[in-house]
Length: 180
Image (tube, rainbow, N blue to C red; front, side):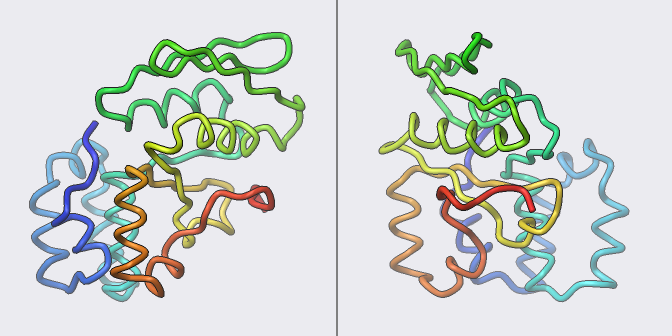
């Protein structure tokens, strides 16, 4: 799967109705494949443009994690978003063994509900400094969280260009973050 390009990221932070329509056209096949075109049409009646943009963007580029997701599946989902990287995951008696570009990294789990974010934080540490995972703020109070993986330098550039909007749209994955 591909990452958003500069035009896609600009749309996320500067988009208007016309750009939203072009984005939907550009990724129409993906929306149809996911059978959410009717949801997008409904959303247009219920949400503002500013609310719609991160939702459709997340559908195309986000990683969705349910609070019940298997931890190895979380690693696979994020790994699919990393171009030119090799990610493998195995269960161990202590948790997970994540192999990233040939190097193994253990991720100790507590075997509790806290493991989803232990896995996400652990994988985020493994892929840095090259990439970083952030949470779409709008999904935080849900039992399903949406994330975006970008190269670290892309996040840094976005912080310079859109400091307030970035903070309103994304939350850094830190120790406090968990499912509500």
